[in-house]
Amino acid sequence: DSGVTQTPKHLITATGQRVTLRCSPRSGDLSVYWYQQSLDQGLQFLIQYYNGEERAKGNILERFSAQQFPDLHSELNLSSLELGDSALYFCASSVVENSNYGYTFGSGTRLTVV
Amino acid sequence: GENVEQHPSTLSVQEGDSAVIKCTYSDSASNYFPWYKQELGKGPQLIIDIRSNVGEKKDQRIAVTLNKTAKHFSLHITETQPEDSAVYFCAPYRAGYSSASKIIFGSGTRLSIRP
Image (tube, rainbow over all chains, first blue to last red; front, side, top):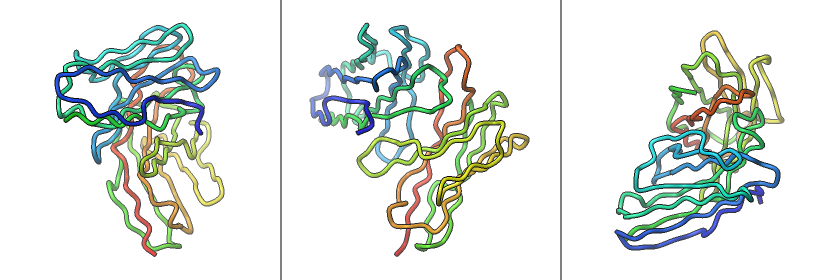
């Protein structure tokens, strides 16, 4: 157990629907990062939060949004889902942004859009 | 950070032999150089890292070497074992400052250990 908790582990939904992925960072970590990993692909950076504030954005689609709450957990909202959104979504956390101790990843949420 | 390239994309080695994966980056301000291992069905896990004031770091069978002048660093695995089969990612960036940055991961190297 890495200390980063992601729920749900698996999600199957239909095209056009909306889902919410949840991440609880490791205790004491203030920064949360979201990554998308499609089949046999690398880790694509989506968005980063630090202590409730959005800090950096990658190639995140307009249909996707996220937030970090006062208790530091984060949610990634995916709407108007398309087949191509099927992927593994990882959350990672670190004590501070740009930490020189690296990231701790959760075990991911596998999203299947049918 | 910025542009990160990883080579090779796939690597197959005989059990007991050594494996080397190279990561090249473009941002000369990068000062933190980690390697992550992702096993099937799991999230990436930090396995070793190096900071720019050090040229080499070793932890049992794994080591990382850094060439800041040439802007590349490498992961070395010696005496490979079946459990080393995984995808390995590098993610260099500038650590220790407050501005946000989009930390970019390399495209990954799929390492297979042949029995």
